[in-house]
Image 1: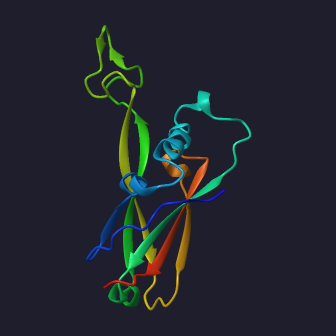
Image 2: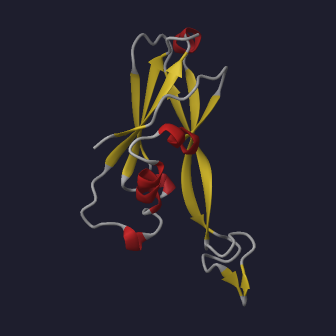
Length: 149
C-alpha cells in the first residue's frame, strides 16, 4: 500500500520540503501515518507482520529547475533519545526540562535528494529511511515538471 503526500509548493532555488507540513493534506489521515511512523521509535506498538510501505512525496519543478537539475532537502520527522535525561524523562526526582518528561525529542532531519538536469518527465528516487530509525517506511521522491511557473 503506497501512501501519497500531496504536492508541495515550488520554491526558488535550493529547497527544503517538510514532510510534517506536507501531512496537512495527507490521506488517509495525519494520525494514521504518524502512528505508523512513531511506532519505529516505540517498539512495543509495532506489529510483527508489518510490511514495508512507500511514503511518496511529489516535488513540482519549474521549467528552469528541471533544466538545471538540483537538490531538494526533505525534512524527515523522527524522534531521538533525549541527551539530557538519556531517555528516562527525568533527572533525579525532577522532570527533564529538555524533553518535558517524554524521554525523546521529536525533530526534523534533512535528507538531501538530488535530481539531474534536462528532465522532461517524472524522475523518481527511492530512499530507505533506516538511517533515521524508520524501518517500516521508505521515501519515494517524485520530481515532476510543474504546470505553473
